[in-house]
Image (cartoon, rainbow, N blue to C red):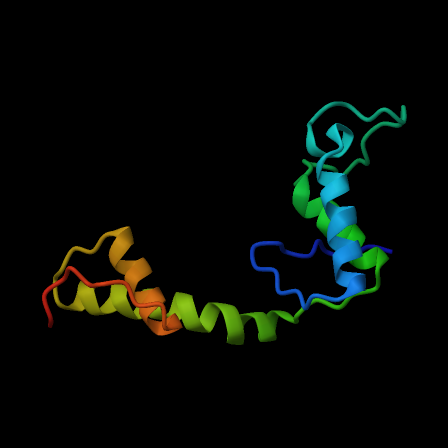
Length: 128
């Protein structure tokens, strides 16, 4: 069965016995040099012809995730929950600054995202 990897940039877990066991197995995989390094396979087989690289911890997470039969958020759900909140705030900040002719740095984008998330950092920028 060919399936895509599960992205691990944002992980949401409800603490249950099953989730804890899954996370323990993921940690064990991440502590295994055969998985976490770019050393040649110890199995003696050549790499699959389409193999490009190993994403290490993401690969270990994704394979265990599928083994346990968990379901990932759909791309639509991910976009609505994760990207909409933080990335939309960064986009609005960038477009507002561009329209006003202001230069903005990374910290300003992160402050905008934090404010939307309700984790307001003190702003050092003058009010608009």
